[in-house]
Length: 316
Ligand code: SF4
Image (cartoon, rainbow, N blue to C red; front, side):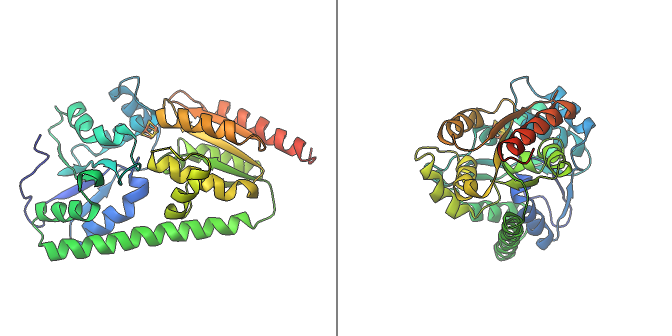
């Protein structure tokens, strides 16, 4: 596997960023990094029916909906850029793992698109193997023919922008907890929440019903990792732990909770079962989306859930 290991030549490469999965965590970091290096980055458009159908056709049936959508975004970028960025993300340290799909992603994408004549660019984040994020970005800069000093500066500016963006989103959400009205906390991965076909549908339905939707993933990440132990001292998935920490922090501030996942998600199947067993004093809705989930079915289930909460609170 070469992944374009040779230098790409200064000023020549256009990098494609699929608007799915970890783009919703690191999109700001990636865009700022490439911009600071003077490299053009293009992003696929928001998920639409065509992207969903293309991704579903490319994936094996066992792939989760998030991965299917990701493949649709990669397909949308084929031929529109010199390289498509597909990082391998294994872990952030001990007991801080990512779902195995993020480890397999570069190999999987390369294999699926092997006949497309498209080059891919990757980096490896595996803290347990001493492959830290900053070193990975310095290697990316080197491959783009940029000096280490420029790479370090671009990475640090990108990281700063990413953290500032997340902090602003967390602070904006904290204001929503103070508002009057029925509040429902949605526990889902950021890439599920940010996708118009997944979290977007749920958020729209809740808002139309006059409910204030809140996100368990929008929390101070370090604090959430510590708090997550209250619900599970052994959960090893980093993103699930952040969500668990968000639930611990805000479960008393909301009227109900939706566990939203992309079918079939191994980590969510375990973690959501755990949440259901531990949180018996709050109305819970388990919503699993697949590529066939129409909005009508989702809307009906949400409406019933909201009615149950309102009835319970004596509003109906
Ligand atoms: S955590 Fe679940 S939704 Fe996310 S990539 Fe893994 S299987 Fe898919």
